[in-house]
Amino acid sequence: MIADPILAATNLSRAFRLRSGLFAQAQSIQALDGVSVTIAAGEAVGLAGESGSGKSTLAAILLGLDRPDAGNIQLAGRDIVEYGRLARARMIQPVFQDPYSSLNPRHRIHDIIAAPLVIHSLATGGVLSQKVQSIADLVGLGRSMLQRYPHELSGGQRQRVAIARALILEPRIVICDEPTSALDVSVQAQILNLLSDLQSELGLSYLLISHDLAVVSQLCTRAIIMREGKLVEEGSVDRVFGQPQEAYTARLRDAVLEVPSHG
Image: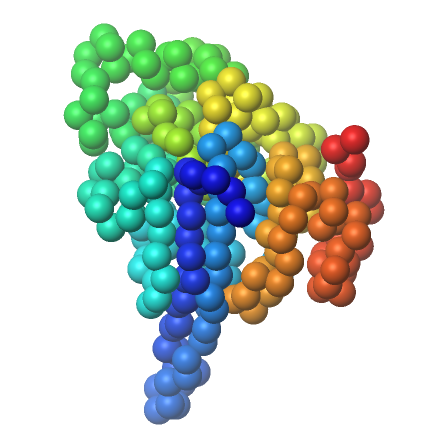
């Protein structure tokens, strides 16, 4: 058990009622079933599982985009319901899978990155532009790109924009939902290296959601495996991937050619 975690979600459950047809009886789908997750300050935790395992539902709840049916979440030692929407956003920020769909195509990159500061009334004028330029430098975006539009950037550059936008509020936690799956392999490595460097420099905590255990292994030190809404295995990356206790985890591991070791 982590002492004084930055994030502690306990026994989260969430069900959805779905209909297969107009006159069909609604069926209950258990997306989360008693899931508990803790993240220490400065820790990178990987959340892995196949599509439909409940990963994105968990992320949506942690980000405040959905509510659990049961369970509770502690954020920096306080019940998360005590945070207002904006205060919660300043603590937890997302980086999504497809950077193009998450960026407004009508806005210049400068304004996209600046938007959180404007919404939270944290900076204006020259101070705002200076903060945008500083975060652009930090994520490896040339300042000339700030006047461009998303369609003028490569996939890797757009993901750097998404990371800059997430970090400009100086959050404690970043939830990365498949942040490299839409990118070429060589660009994936660059983005993962960037996230690792930013974690060290800024003391960030990450929840990295991925179906790819190789990606989890590169960035994270602890792994959580989910299946059908339940947590089925948890431990250090080396132990979970090197000596999995569940056949399901072994199948996920064997789906990649090689899982790098942390030494």
